[in-house]
Amino acid sequence: MGDSYTLPEIVTEGILQEMIDRFDTSEYTTKDGWRVFADLAKMQPFQDGNKRTALIAANEAMGAFETQDFLVLPLQPESNTKFIGLLMRYYLTDDATQQDRLLDEMVSLTPGTVEQEQVWQAERDRLESIKKLSTRRVKPFWGGNQEFRQRYLKNLPDDQDL
Image (cartoon, rainbow, N blue to C red; front, side):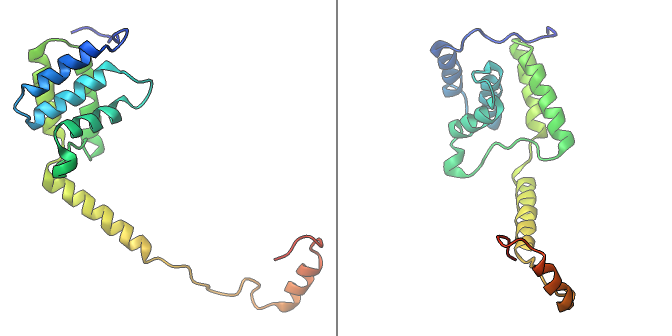
């Protein structure tokens, strides 16, 4: 394994077709979906957003938009950091055995359905609690001091109004 990754000069239709053909002949396992993600992210076809685009493409390939069974990056910061580190190592190797081992490690860090639901429920609860917040006047803005209010308003320029 080298210590730096060199991008392909250009992503050709042939390179993409090889990736599609490999997926089409796979068993459509979660690991196969993550392979689509890793291979597409490794190609770096865009200036920005390669991992996001790769994740969307992998989810589409897996039929996740119909089944709602999405490939989801690790939700915990420590696991996410490890996952990205493994992905960077995936970029550096073309050895299929090494790639398989790295993919196994990456998949082991991704959240299962139960963990995803727990995190999403916690987020729904947080958003619901925000909806229940309201602003309440604790005391009048002028503190009940009408004389101060009148003096303040007198000193405002003509074009400024409260």
